[in-house]
Image (cartoon, rainbow, N blue to C red; front, side, top):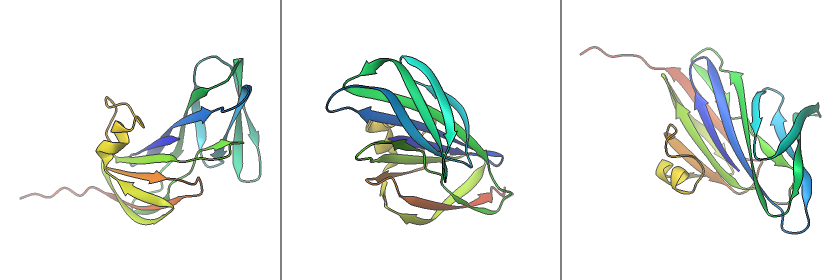
Amino acid sequence: SHHLVDLSPAVARISSKLVYEVPQGETSTLEALIPESLAVVKVSGDGIRDWSLKKSAKYQQCVVELLKPIANRYTLHILTEQPVPALPAEYALPRVMAGSVERQGGTVGIVATDMIAETTDTKGLNRINPDAFVAMGAWDASQTQPQSAFRFSQPDYKCSLKLSAVIPEIS
């Protein structure tokens, strides 16, 4: 799975590209786990019949029903957003995860617009070159390129950011 976190002083938009691989058999239902703090803006992919949200303990479970069963690979796009706290602030990146899967890894890219986002703490993340984030197919090169990027091999990663306003200097 690949996630692009686009931060601005008002809102954080998280674009998630969840790639499901079905090694045996077929499935016509996919699941994603979305933190309750996120509002789901859009769910898209090929051949979606319907999607719904169900509440669970810590997450919203997004259940996607497909028109036809898939047997190999499927990419699901989920756009979520949440307000950003007043600056300066500490911000923990929310994690959108594929549900009911055996293994999960991927990348996270971070874009900060009209603000500064400094990584203060990470767990389960390895820093990668932002160019590699695009080169790996994590994101379309025509979109905003991340200022920082990470790779993860387990879905329980953590990333905290210190967000602050851009202060112009006059010289």
